[in-house]
Length: 288
Image (cartoon, rainbow, N blue to C red):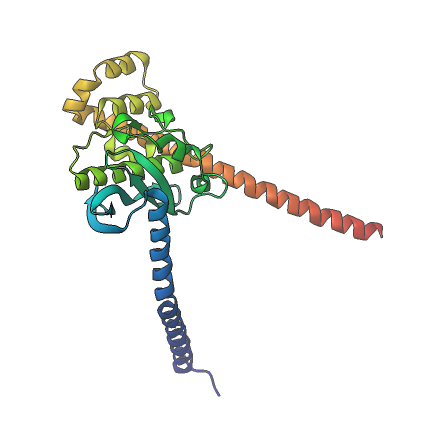
């Protein structure tokens, strides 16, 4: 049959139709199992971050423009804890979702990672039991902490070579704590230390302003003045916020550059080893 424009268009149309039907069928088949798997993962996480309970009441909230779910756990009609599904979009590779368990008094009981796609061997260590991030929070009340990694002047030990992922983890915990306070009727006393991944909070309090100024590498006199007058800057805010935000943005770029450099170095090493293997094989063939 002679090929014509009409024939080609029809062939492409049929192929597209079949592909769309296939994708739709796969979605229909997998949608329910995926939803069931998420529900199961949530139930398991609740058991891991809360004490014994016989029922939960779920409350959907919005904290800092992101959805958060608070599971109020009770036993015999008495509240025994709160489990908060929190998230952040500031991860090195996007969204990170956590389940954070709180005692009625606000102490963090446990934390479990529900979703993450961070760099293998670096940011992914946040899922390991007893990692430095988890240890920094469990058994402590966020109201008595500086919520930030130590590099930014906070109290949290970051994962090695994964500062951006660590900052995002802290951001999700901070959001979970604010949701707990709202649900439990507790006045939120959050002392957040702004990191490079959280420039929108730069200048929000004295500590964050000082940290951002230090990271910016400001000159000694200016830095000293800003550190001494952080209370005034926190009140007036507008002038200090701009340089702090710019400093945070630069720090974020530098941090991402370093972490991506580690990934590129790893890929380069693997390619070199593969090339050496091929060369050895070729040399062996010539010798034979």
